[in-house]
Image (cartoon, rainbow, N blue to C red; front, side, top):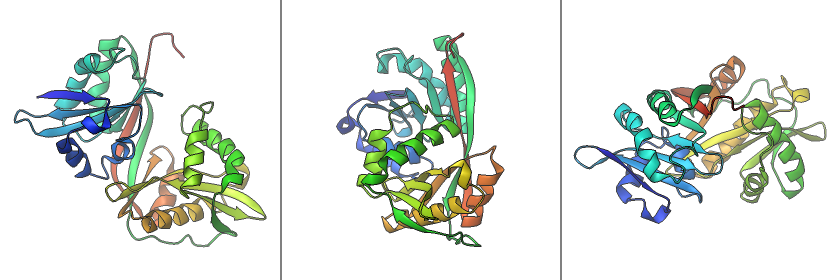
Length: 281
């Protein structure tokens, strides 16, 4: 049993791709970023040499994403990272994935690097069943975001990042421009202007994930988030997604109830753990 790594997308063996694609909902994060530049991909093989787990590291933010894997694979990963990463694993600032895998990884990794592990977010993964339109329907209509919306979208995305524990000062320009260019971001408009937004990821192996659901504080509690989420969910299906997914904060009963009213059903719990050197903010 061992971990194997590559920074080259073309070098990832087909058996690893097949393994990740076999569980498209549980591996949604990996599927979204599997061929992205600046990532290191890992796969775990069992005693018979079959692929039994997968992960990837996004270098810029130092985000380690754990896919489906057995607990022994997660526990073995900290000892294997030093030979895969130039910084011996210290590039990893956060681990994300299914709760059991992240918990199995976090303690030995923190011990190996002399850092602390703190759970930063507890998430629930939902999958859309039959879409139910919001009732009562709010005022307004949906539209596809265009180039002229980019300044507003950047402002909203920074606010969204702060709300969900991401870095509000990061450069989101490339992300927003790609969403607009590919028509994957929807705005809800009412009273003459945008009041909410939501996006969906490129369909990969039949799955797409709804994200960036955001309503500015002055427009909340009016049904706009539900309306724009329903619209972007339809768009994801129209783009070819058989499974439409989204994550919610388990501590937010409002959003959990909203998405279930729209037809989303919980399928698993995920966790984010941040790693910090003692004394580091």
